[in-house]
Structures are given as C-alpha cells and as structure tokens.
Image 1 (tube, each protein chain N blue to C red):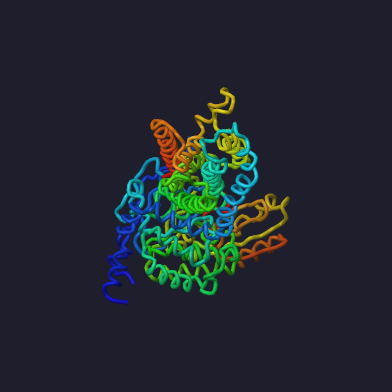
Image 2: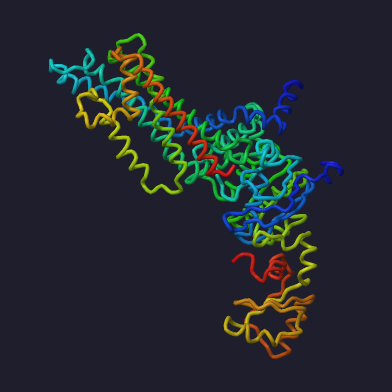
Length: 281
Length: 314
C-alpha cells in the first residue's frame, strides 16, 4: 500500500472524522446495510417483482379486458381496459410492497432480531435509522416499479411518452402509505396481529375502493370519500395521467402530487420522532 | 503500548449520575473515574443500574442529572462524537442474521464512515482475533452462542476503539466459551484498551478487573481492586457448612467463635475465617457434624453479601 493511501486510511479512521461522516451520511450507511440484508431474500424480491405484474396483466389483459372491452357503454378514459388498469396495478403493487417492508421489518429491527440496536451504539442516531430504512425500501420500490413498467410496456399498455413517470408515481404512492405505517410500527411494543389487520382492513379495502379497477365516479357517491382520502386513489389517478394521458385538471394533478408528498413528509417526521423516542437518544 | 502519561489520563468521569424512570431511581447519584488503559468493572445484581450507567456513557440513554465526561465530550450533546471513540458489546447479541459473518463486520464498520477497502482488511484481522476465520462466510445463525459473542466483540473493535464497553459479556455462555472470551479481553487490555464491563459473575470481575465498583439499587456500595475489596470486607477464607435446610439456622449460634463472622443462608452457613480447615476442626470438636463442608478462598460474592445482606445472583 502506498504511503499516501495508508495515511488516508488513518485519517478516515480518526473518531472525529467517523463522527462527522456519520452525521452527514449515517442514513445512507444504514440504507447500505438494509440493501445487503435484502440480498438474503433476493429471489423472493425478483420473483414477486416479475411474477406480480405478469399475473396481474395476464388476468386483466387476457381475461377481464377481453370481456370489458366488448361492452360499448364501458368508459375507461378512451383507452382499452388493460391500459386503464395497468398504471393502477403498478401503483397498488408498490403500495402493498411498501406496506409490508414498513411493518414487519420495523418490528424486526426493534424487537425480534433487534438489528437497529447494533448501529444504535455507533455514531448513528435513531432518526438516521428511520431515514435509512425509508431509502432502502425506496430503492426496492424503484427496482420493482421499473420491472413492472417494462412489463406494462411489453403488454403495449403505456400510451404516453411520459409513461416512465409511472415509476416515481409508484414509489411516491408506496411511501405515502408506507411511512405512516412505519411510524405506527415503531410505536407499538408488541405485534398482536395488528399488521395483519392493517393489511386486511386498510390496505385491501384501499385496493378495492380506490378506483383501481373502475373509475371512482362509478361507485355510490356515499362511498367516494374513501377514494378522496385514499393515497392509492391519488396514486392511481396520477399514474393514469402520466401513462395514458387521462384528462385531469392541472390543479387536481397538483393535489395528487402534493397529497402524496405531504403524507410522505408526515410519515417520515412521525417515524423519526417515534424512533428517537423509542431508542432513547 | 500506551505511555505512562496516556495511561494516567482520565477517559471517563461520572459525577453524581442519576437516572430516574418515573419515581424509580435506576441510578442514584454515582461518581467514578476511569483512567486510560484500566479495566474497570461494575459489579451488581440484575436491576442494580449497571446497564443504565453503560447506556448513559454511550449517550443512548439521557441522564436525569449529574455530569458525565467521556474523552472530554458530553455524551448527551455529543453522542455521535462519543460513540465514535467507543466499542460496545451489548448484553443481548444483535448481529444481523441475514448477513454472513464477515459482512456483519463490514456493515458495522461503515457506520464509522470507514472505507470498504480498509474494512475488508480489518474484518479479516478481527476474524482471526476472534478465532472465526473459518466461519467468515457462514451464516450467523449457524454459530454457537460463544462464537456469536466473539463475533459481537470483534464487531465492537472494528473502529479500533480506545474504550470498550462490555455489558455482561459472558452471560449465558458455558465455562469453556467464557474462558476463551476472557483470554481475548485480556489481550485487549494488554494492548492498552480501556475496558469497562458490567457483570454479576464474581470470578469474571476478579479475572478481568483492575478496579471495580459494587453497585446495588443504583448506588455504589464499595470501590477498589477485587483483592482490596475482599481484604476489606471479607476474611481470607470461607468455610461453607450445610446441616440441612431446616437445621442451619438452629445450629448457627453454636458456631460462634469458629470464625470471625457467621452468615446464615437458607441452604448453608458461611463461616468467615483466616483458616478454614482449622475452623472446621473446631466445629467438629463441638460435636457438630455438617452434611457437607467446603473451604474456599473468599470472593467478591462474599463482599457483596457482606455489603448488602443479599446474594449477587438470586
């Protein structure tokens, strides 16, 4: 090793340098750790990332769409049913993945395998663990949404030149649901099937009543409010706007983006607070 | 090896340290100093406040009052800077079982901002130190309890810390694994690393600590080297005699004078004496015949019993 290189390592090794680097990059260090951990279940990630869109798009494109498209009174933004449903399916799959990654692994970090408590005694602070976790899940979502998008393209279901924006729309929607769930997961001491209840009674109804398979306006007006407050509806509409050029007033597109972004910011801040409170520093 | 001036420098200074949870004082006004290179122990039963003190040193638990100075830094306001100097071995292993053995060291080193190229080399050195070279690519969950503990210690050394905090480092390990760990810790001490360890094992404290504080209910009961504490608060030897659980208390008055002091426990009677065999002869000469008898050197367990009236491991 050259003398310069040796000196560089020694400088990098000084505690004050470690602390300064950790203050600046600590969240990224934890992201790196989580991404390395995800390699342990990489096969599952790949299979679900590829298998999910294939299954959804085959069942919609080959199955349901062939029936729906024969009905002349059906109105899906002037496009075929597959193209109508595909953006929402991408967004929904991002939301479901994110919800999973923000509940069980959080409890794992605090309680089951306690992996948060390893970095807790290094120069990192709890808020950086929360941020690092969010970024790692964000990376997974980017990969998943990209794979989904490529399969949507292969099915010929993305019409607009801006359709690639489905990828950030999916990531944003996932995190809008996931980060508040992360904050909640950090606040509970014991998992008494709360996560399963959330999946069954919050995530699944959102999936069904957020205009994923049909326009929200076709639901009884008394139920449409579910869509208005649902991050998934805002994500679905945003996805359709970018992928098939769904006609939306500009202000409504802005509302979709701002609503989702606001939920992300709220979720991250709430999670940082809960992580700090729980870990005691 | 560190020089004399370096060794005399105080690296940890605690003054009137208090930690309160509601109306419970987990740590109740303790003060101590640890010079560089010393092996310093906190000995006490479960719930004595040892781990809370360790967490306050690392700045991961905020103190209620008092002063704490680690290498000239306040862990409460300068937590990352303090922890950059420390290696920490927690009471409960928190290795990442989804990562391989060597990867656990590398990701941990990244938390200190250490470059990957350096960490590759450092991880191999530490695996050799922990006698885990052949397990580098093994899954963590395939390791024995002793190996996991050694890996946790190796992980705590990734940043080459000058202070190593060990919270009950050998609890739950079999005797052989404990001795391997003690050997590794002793080597670190020889290299000039300041060791701060909590334990409720007297033999561990006697093996590893230059000096210790005996803690009970958040307060310091005594302070000194293991030998000095035993000298001050116990006799040279202890004779343990058993007459049967229902007879021990009744027989005890008849043992008066057989030693310097008599302690009656539910299952045995302890006779503190300078000459255990001589005391046993005296007892037999009085026509008393214990079911079992044992002469041993006095230990920190006896010191704790003397100071608190209670056994360390209950």
